[in-house]
Image (cartoon, rainbow, N blue to C red):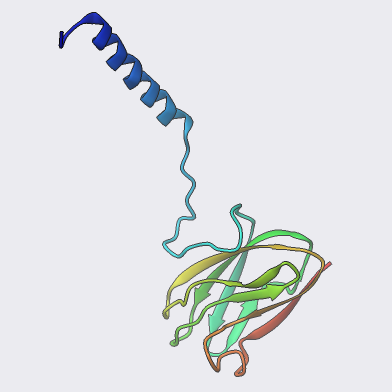
Length: 134
């Protein structure tokens, strides 16, 4: 029987279960269309500005922990930010067009890390910065 009480009860139970499951889930987003790579947890925000041909940030000294580099490309050319050091092997943003923004999240251990643009020729022209974690 299509409308039997048992079928109605099963349908209501299934609907209630789906509704409760939806209430218990949560969505976490980075607020940007550029993928965050190198870690799953958001870290302490660090503002980075890239230009032709420099990388600027407020400090080059950090304590161990997780950081999200929020990169703004203020130059006319495309750039990215790549991080390499202890426990981090060439993790970075996608290539950012002029005026674009992107994020990369990394977890630092003690040691020296290199931040650079991996677009051919950019690192050699000055887009290379060493930071220290200790």
